[in-house]
Length: 625
Ligand SMILES: Cc1ncc(C[n+]2csc(CCOP(=O)(O)OP(=O)(O)O)c2C)c(N)n1
Ligand SMILES: [Mg+2]
Image (tube, rainbow, N blue to C red; front, side):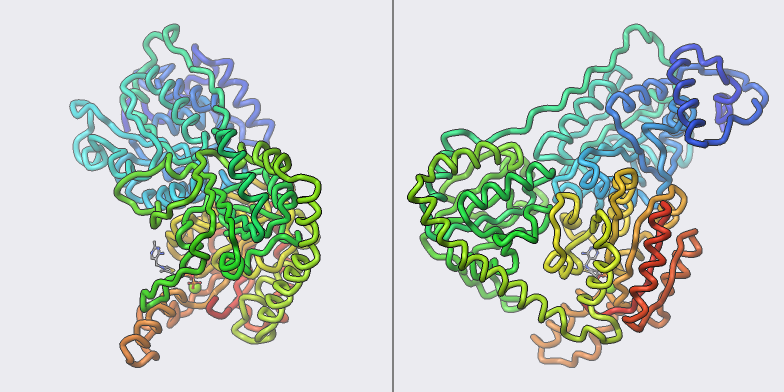
């Protein structure tokens, strides 16, 4: 520990000459929240730095309004860490202890989708970012903002010998550069201020993406030299890019004149207003909507919601409007697996319009751009920002007689919607009382306890029944999925979402796959420690089930035995006791449950815990997917 080490704050109590008022205000705010009062001052250190650069960094971070900073602690940012908790009063941002850097970033991923604004993470520039990488990639593919800071000592002459060298890196961001929107390694405090504000604005301007700022260790630990010369630029959010007016007019004409128009939405909507505009657009055209589910794009209660009929609708369509669809080619074609046979679903002459920002965010190495799909009209624009003008353009194109023609479709569309729901309900009824428990039963039991609440389901891809069957009308109901299907994201992202929803009275739940939780189960401790009320219902199929299916498929292809498909894919012998895993980390938990009749009562008890503001887990031994 260096001389000016960990105790300087309490020693200086009240004497922090510069910025003292802000510090005092923050401490007062923290004490008002019930935080413990400062302990007795220890003996003074030999040399004191009253205003380290990291205090100024905290001022910069505070100026963005970021409320939380998730981190696994590390010496490359020890000064910044100390400034956050003492100078900043551990309040906006509040330090969240994570047990893995992947958890920090995935938490921030879920938080951003639920909060509609980013939070920060803090990591070692070397080993920390290496751990964080997959979660950053998930956020990148999901177009979600995360503001990342990394510690590093750039000046080799100042590094402590030994471990600090292993933990320093010439260019920390190199590791992530293929999947962050921007990064910088500032050389001065003023540079840090400007780059942090720039990074925040870039991250939150659609297409939203993660950004990384390196906080140099010497800049953090050295005193601020000339405070009067430092300034923090004002953060002004940029207006999102809107599709060009003429192009919207052409699109509107094409859609209004189509006999079988279809809207396919993916990462389209992020607010209730956006959801309302989607309904206006669909109703104006009386066109069915297939929601691919990366966001909550359309109310599932609306008769035009036809997500499950998508292949049939694609086959019939003479015009398709893609709204920020990650994989348009994949909507029009299918490839059989494992034989790789290509089949075109759509008509050869279907007219295609794509409103998207995807062309603005392409890099060469990672292939999240998907197969190239030519379209008749490509419009560069953010869907949410463009919807009002698009709705107006569509309404202008529809004459009174045309409106009557479109209205005549309603009865058939309603009947098709009812038939779709009926099919899904009867599929869900299969094996409803089975043990291990069916995924449809898991979803139904969860709905039973959530239906009286304002609710959010943090992941809606691993088990799809909820999105297919639950009546959802609010933009916060379904948060979509990880983006890149990098496993290990669901649990921490759900905890991040629950943190964002905590003060809004929204109950956050997750159907939690076992394999996903076991990547970094310490997220349970983070939820308990920080009192984050997540309702976790384990989808414990005791397997990496998707991989079981892949092995079976390969065995079928090779005409070989299938009973070996469990080797390397089953998570049994021994079975993991998830209730104990959770309890050992301070989380209320029950299970393992085998009888489906026991799920409902356990979930009721769990909900009571969650409504008290704490996490709860119910472990159910369940079927594949
Ligand atoms: C980081 C990472 N490693 C491996 C995979 C391959 N993979 C895809 S699905 C899956 C199984 C996940 O198991 P679980 O979370 O329990 O979900 P289940 O398939 O059982 O529903 C794995 C390992 C991946 N997608 N990401
Ligand atoms: Mg599993």
